[in-house]
Length: 174
Image (cartoon, rainbow, N blue to C red; front, side, top):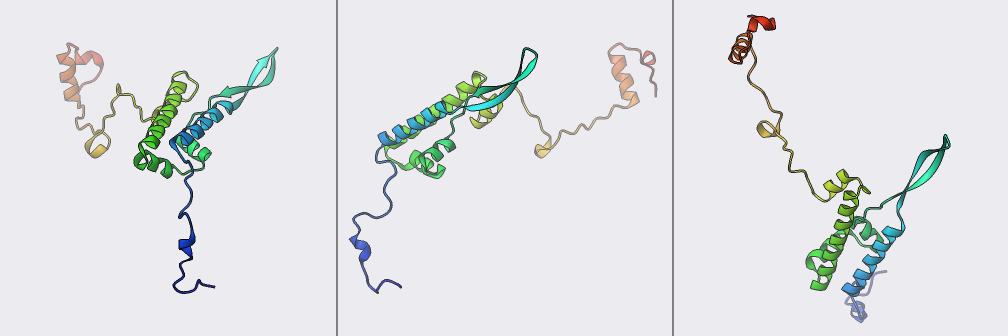
């Protein structure tokens, strides 16, 4: 049954929309710290087979759990879009907490990878790091590099002679 025409029942509400999940930036920081503690208290485990007195023995091994913003959002019961909105549109106090949490998560991953506790390749990609010492070369429009010059027997003879090598001793002639 539809509401009667012209009803104004909605005005009787004292509050419109849902209540804020975190009443203050301090409450958000406290909840984020609970996530940090949960990550520390809940490492991943690997079942490693080792040899003891010549017998294979199963030994559980600690594996560091990497903090992620996605994991934090799941822990807090919010979406990553909500986290992004807080980063961009909330009060200065919320922005400061979000920035601080982003830095904690980044530092934990970077330090874990540097210590060999996390896969450094995965973490480097996740953090947007790349090795500047190597260069990737591509051809036209990003395609493969095409080598247009072919080595003909005559050209090979010229190159060998220029380097002081008798082409007859190499075993090839044109």
